[in-house]
Image 1 (cartoon, rainbow, N blue to C red):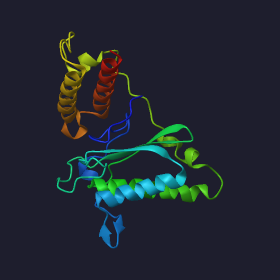
Image 2 (image 1 turned 180 degrees about the vertical axis):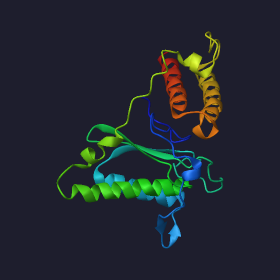
Image 3 (image 1 turned 45 degrees about the vertical axis):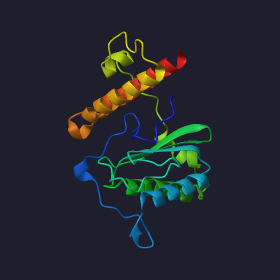
Image 4 (image 1 turned 135 degrees about the vertical axis):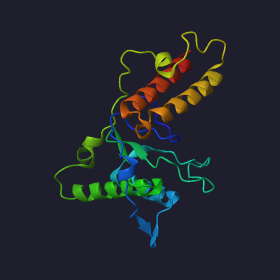
Length: 210
């Protein structure tokens, strides 16, 4: 399974989205102020380390600097959803949240969830991995037997004479365009968005193998 992207958001397959009208205002704070995206990232990284998680990828629509921290000169993304992909006890997990109206608050919610998981494990009834079992990362969904070219709307001869880098750039543009149209808030569905993500991954895998 291809490593999820930090940007744009790679929402896990079959995980329902929260309708925009049902999202809440923030509650996670530091020094009396709502968490900034960078502060929330530090908090979730610390909590993940405490439970023994590794290989973290925090995926969101926050535009990032080269060091992986969010750019302060960018507007808040329209889709505030976030997903933390990580490994624990050799098992892949995906914690996703779009309950709040701001990405920083959704990241803060992930940190709070991990903190609660640590508290539960103190009772000795279940390990962190067992407590998080419901969030096991799932493989990409099936696209009904269609090829990635069909899903993304490419001609059978694509990429033709394009280099791998040029083909990937073209695929990324097509993927982002179709993903916007497939968003549930615009009349699409989670399944359609998941199929597009899986098609992009299959395309990249094929190009990398050539």
